[in-house]
Length: 235
Ligand SMILES: [Fe+2]
Ligand SMILES: [Fe+2]
Image (tube, rainbow, N blue to C red; front, top):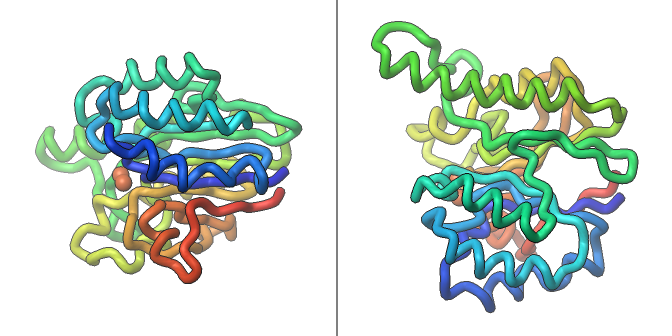
């Protein structure tokens, strides 16, 4: 299976042509398209409408999660329903099996990496922040635990390892992702992990357990030579 993946399309209401250009060649080179969140700029249904107008033209299976930008207007449930309405698989609640390959995904959250990971200690505000991070890794755990396929693809918005965030300012690393997400993948097993969010990060890395991780944030792909609109991995 040829899997095309891209995150951080950040579709605005005037972006119809830009999105069309970025995605039009997907059906020629891939069997399925993964969208790793930040589908929109401000999480507005009218922005997603523009993106959906282009997605339906591709006529291949599409699997998606949301990113932090898609939560900005508090309309995330509406956005999920809109995607489901055009048969885009949203992994937020459920894993998905397609052609013998399992797909699991969550938005993920921040919290930091390795020794720099924030722990639930002290003020309630810190605890609720860490709780949000734990909650996302638990959701991923539940999804992966339900998959029976040997080959399994994990899609998330936030970075699961620091390596693919390298290139961003070190000061913001704790807000780019969380090691808890990669720990879950190492424990439950995954063949490959895709994520976005770190627009100026690095394109490849590995979890501590050796699972390949690809940062497919569009601004990062476009900054490479030659620029790419999405990444294709064959499983
Ligand atoms: Fe983004
Ligand atoms: Fe993001």
